[in-house]
Each structure stands twice: as C-alpha cells, then as structure tokens.
Length: 394
Ligand code: TMP
Image (cartoon, rainbow, N blue to C red; front, side, top):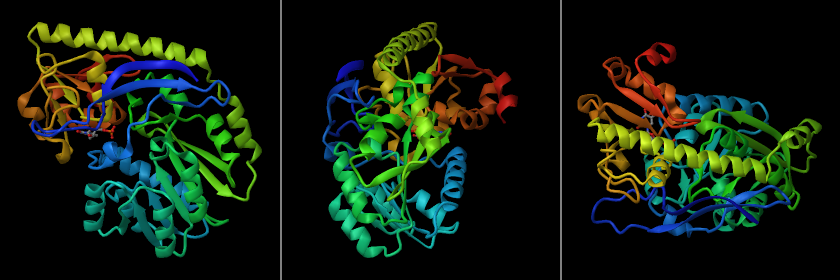
C-alpha cells in the first residue's frame, strides 16, 4: 500500500458537539493505494461505535435528492421481478418512505444510529436498529419473505470488514434478488478535486476495478453500473448471484484509468485549492468583510480544518438541519446556525460547502445574491458566484 493523500490529524467530520459534550477527538486522515487492484482506502479505521452511535447526518431533503430517489427507483424497479425492498443504512427512512409510496410492496430498514431509526419509526418505516451483519441479516430475512431488491446507499464505503458484509448479503439475497450498492465514484471525485469527500467515515474510495476484484471472492457478479450526479458523482453497482458480468460492464471496467500518478496530481491540486480558498477567506475577513459558510456538510469540516480557520475568519455556518444547530463545526470554535437567519444576517460572502446542491442554494438565496452577496463555490476550484448566476440556475 502506498500513501497517496494526507491531511494529517483531523477531527471526525460529523462530530458536531455543543460546548459541554465530550468530543471524539482526532485521527490521521490518509489514503493508501493498492497497486494491485487499485483500491484506495484510509490508513486507520475509527471504531464504528464512536463514529455512528449518535449520527447527525440526515439524508438531505433537497429537491435534488428527491429527483435522485425518483430516478434511481425508476431504473431499479424495471430490473426487478419482486418489489419487497430492504435498505441497509436506511438513515431516517426517507428513501424507503418514497418507494413505499411508489410501487414497493413492503419495505424494511436496517440502521445503526438509534436517533435516526427512531425518526424512521415515527415516519411509519419498520427499522431494525443495528449495524448490518449476520445478526441483523437473519432478523431481516425472518421479517421479510419477499426480498426483491436490497439497497445499500452510501454505506458500503463506510464498511471495514467487506467479507462480513458480503456474507451477510449472501444470507439475505436469493438468486433473483437485485442488490444495489451506491457509492461516490472515485473517478468523479478525482476529476472534480473533491478531496472533501475524504473523511474517517469513508474507508474506501471505490473504482469498478477494485470492487470487481472483491466480488470474485463472493457468489455475486456485477450486472450493471448506473451513474448519477448526486454528491458530485455516484455509481450504483447492481450485483446479483449466479450471473456472469455482461461484456459492456467488463468494457466499462477496462476503460477506467486511475493510477498512482492520478492520485498524486489530485493530492497536489487539493493542496493548492486549500491554500487558495484559505487565503481568499483570510483576505476578505481582514478587509472587514463578513464571511460565513453555507451547508454544515461533513465536507465543510474537512475544508475548514484543512484551511485551519477559526470564527474570526469564518463567523458561522448556516444549515437547514435542526440536529446540527448551535453545535460547533468539529475541531473548531465555529458555530452552526439556523439557515433561516441567513437573509437577515446578510453576510458579504458565503462559502458553499453544500456545493453538491449548488443550484438549489443559489435559487434559495437569490434575493441575497441580487442584493450584492456572493457565494464562493470551492470545487473544482474556488470561484465567486454573484447576482448574474441567479437567472442561469432558477
Ligand atoms: P451533504 O452534502 O453531506 O448532504 O450535506 C449538505 C448539508 O447542507 C446538509 O447539512 C444540509 C445542508 N443544506 C442547507 O443547509 N441548505 C440547503 O439548501 C441544502 C441543499 C443543504
């Protein structure tokens, strides 16, 4: 394994705390690359019980996410003969609620964060409150007879013991079950310089080649690869037992072109971007401008800590998620505040840490932009967005 990327010691990206909470602490954030199968993974694994016991990441309620749900469900629904659906890492049950209203005959979630499983239950989504493993898979099999589709959206790259995950999947999936594993696509991540997707929860950065190498040790084979723009570029790996990978998927795997050099260039570019945005914010702040953040995403924690900012430079970060309000951006003294106050506070510049929902943020804050405010979009390279962008995106 070769080290190809490092941000040194970093806090856990979703460890949003109030003043009196005990913080989880810091851990090295480094990516290692396997020269044999091309898998990129973190050098250390933070214990899942520390990372996920009370988890503040709630599936976005944005319009873009709703559109993604609809597209994904339409694409997968067509492939399956049975519509009983299990979701691994079902968060607050929002996706299952959507598909239950759109053709799924029965739905069941498996979610380790007790705060999120409780929200799902209130929303009427039956949820097993546990990590996915042989125990929860056995219980899910007992509850759900018809298991046509299994989703694992943005959960596989959080898993350390892949073989345990695949064995549990094997227990749950029949020959006709379609398993859909959605992950951020490392090729898109490198192309768009989104180093901010590298944090302790994301243990692996998957290419088709690396994933396919793993599958060869399991009864599953790749049936299809779907691509979506969500989260800056994601792939859905559709796998099934007892099939062989079709030639067009084999071709897709062969066309991937990712090596040590690509990672090295990405690492150099990321370092440049961190310096560029950090300098920009510091200059605006020292000229008396009020600079804030927009979207307290895990990505914001990565950026803010990589730039070494305090609330002197970045006053606060606005966010629409109630669970994050009046807590601090991990590793900093910068508070997260209610998005509703943004227009009233009228900052001069807002760094758009929810850049994956850029169009939506611009539409929402059109009045502020027209009044002279500016967003700073950090990727693929920091750029200012002003009033002239409103017409283009609304
Ligand atoms: P995510 O990219 O990890 O989903 O995080 C996006 C964060 O941005 C999440 O905390 C919600 C927040 N957000 C807003 O505050 N306002 C918005 O308009 C959108 C789209 C997201």
